[in-house]
Image 1: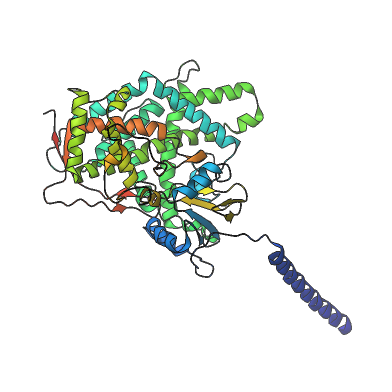
Image 2 (image 1 turned 45 degrees about the horizontal axis):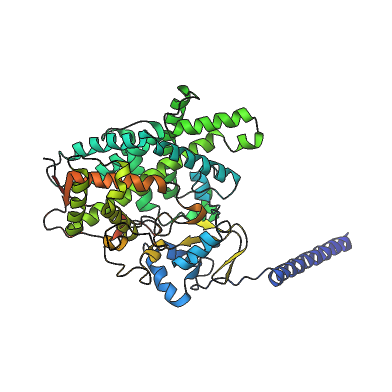
Length: 504
C-alpha cells in the first residue's frame, strides 16, 4: 500500500511538472509566433495600468498636442489592457476616417457602452454592420423628409417666438442656459414627438439636468470599462449614470407607447411615426433577419439617439456662442447689423434666408471651431488590421481624433487662439468653402447624423436671439473662456448675462 501511495505521489508530481512545462512552452510559442505590429509610438506607462492616469487629465486633448511634438501625429496610450490610438492632425484623420472609412468605422465593445445602449442596439455607439446601416439610413431619411416640409420651419418659429418672449421679461442678470435648453429641447421634441414643454415642466428639467451631469462628470470615463471585477460591484458613479440613463429611456419609451396607441400607417406626424411606419413595413415583409434588426428596443434606441444628438451638442454649442458674443461685443455688433438688414421687423428668419446671413453662419462656425464640445469625438474601433501614417493598427483598436488639436493647428488656422468669424468669409463677405480642418461633427462613415439638423437649427435660433436681444456680461465680470468638463467634453462654465430687449 505504501509503495502504491509513493507511486501515485511521484506520478502526480511528474504530471504537475509536465503540465507546467507544457504551459511554459505554450506561452513561449504564443509570444514567438504571435503577429508583431509596428504600432504608433507613445509614452511608457505604469505596469498593468499603462497610461490610465492620462485619461483622468481634464486637458487630455491639450496634453496630446504636447506629446505630438515628441511622438508625431499618431500616438498610442494604453489604458490598462485597452490600447487607444489618437490621431492629432487633419491629414491622418482624413487618411483613416475618410480614405479607409470602413476600416475605422467600428465602435468599441465597452461595458458602459453596452449598458447605456441596452446591449448595443443604438446608432451612435453600436458597432459597424447591417443593423447600424439600416437604422442610420432610416433615421437620416426620416429627418430629411421632415426638414423638407413646412413643419420644420413652423416648429422653429413656434418655439423661438415663445422662448424669446419669455426671455425678454428678464430684468437683471441670469443664466441664459435655461432659455437655450428650452429652445433646443422643444425643437427636437417637436421633431421627434410633436410635443412641446413649458419651462417649469419636471420631465424637461430632469432630462436637461441628466445631460448636464453626463457632460461635466462622464468625461473621464468609467473604471468598469478597464477593471472587469468592478462590473460585478459597480462604482457609485456608474450606478448614478445608469439611473440617469434609465430615466431618459423612460421618457422616450413613454412617448413611443403613446404614439402606438394613436398610430395610423397613412399619417406621419413626426420622427417617431416615421420609425413606426418603417417597423410596420418590416413586419409585413415577414423577413426574420429584418425583424431581428427592428425590435422595439432598436426602435427606442434610434429615437433616443436622434433626440440626444439633436439636443446636447446644439445646446452646448449655442451656450458657447452666446458667451463668445458677450465677450466680443464688436462681433455681436456686426451680427446685429446683418440680422437687422435681412429680417427688418421680423423676429425669426426663414430657413431659406440662411444664405443671406453669412456672418451669422461664420460666427457659428468659429464658435464650433473654438468651442468644439466633443474635443476627442466619439471613439472609433478598427474593423480589421489596417494602417495609418505607416503604422499598423490591429483589429479592435480604439481610435480617437483629437478635434481640438485639429481646430487649433497653426498650419491651417491663422492665430487659432483668436475668435475671428471673418476666417470663414471670402473677400466679398460671402461664406467661404469650409476647410477640411473644421470637423466638429467628425468625418467619414461615423460622422454625426444630426449635422444636417443642427446647422440650420442653430443658424435660425442664433439669428433670432440676436434680432431680439443685445447680450452682455454683468458689469465688472471678465469672460471665462476655459471649459468645464472631463477629457472628452468641452463645455462652458456656467455664466450670467444681462440682455437688452431690442424690440422693447
